[in-house]
Amino acid sequence: MGRKRYQPEQIIGYLREAEVLLAKGSTIGQVCRKIGITEQTYYRWRKEYGNLNVDQAKRLKAVEKENVRLKKLVADLSLDKAILKEVAEGKY
Image 1: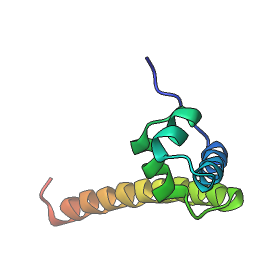
Image 2: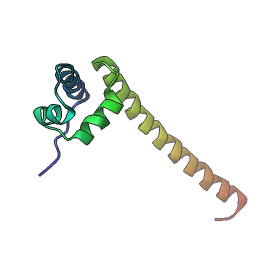
Image 3: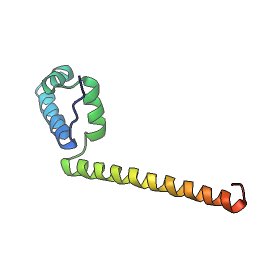
Image 4: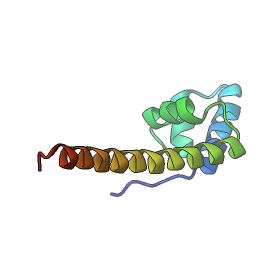
């Protein structure tokens, strides 16, 4: 069975729903079964998205995506620099 992917907006909604259910006296296990996730997933989501609102989560994902792109650019430029340095030293 494949994994189901949730959008950050959905995750935040589920976490808010879980907070309400927990405030009413439900246990973590009951809340996770109602939402349809494991307890491990709940704690991982709470760690990553627990104190964010929907706008902040969207911005976080955009910044992470930009960060990955910039890291790739730096890696490519570093490789080009190393190649040019070897050629200039005559180690080709």
